[in-house]
Image (cartoon, rainbow, N blue to C red):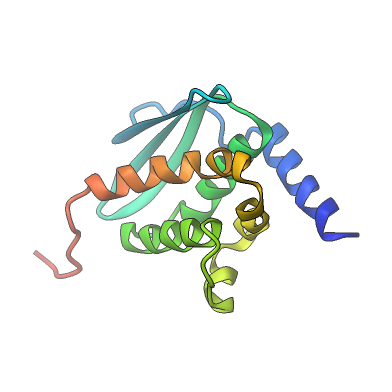
Length: 150
């Protein structure tokens, strides 16, 4: 199986599966991402409790790349601390910008690594980063979490 076919298979799975595409009943944070150039319009909903991303989902419409990137990101950050999620978002966005990423950091991205080739497709970069930018905005809006007992 070639890298391209694996890439296509993972994207199509996440695009069609829809396991992260639903409404959360009472999200603590919501961020809409819209790309008027291609019509992607996705809204990320997240529940953060005590500095941990407990659940996340998205609603809306978008191309296969934008919906798959959002779904893969959600799988990656669920259960992670806000700080860990911020690190993953930073690594992903740096990867898409074409910056050199350490192998161990790429490994942390798990399936999201497949979007590395988007750096060579400028027209698709916004599709692959829409959800990640939504997550970044949500994470930046949170108060810094302390690990000390109150």
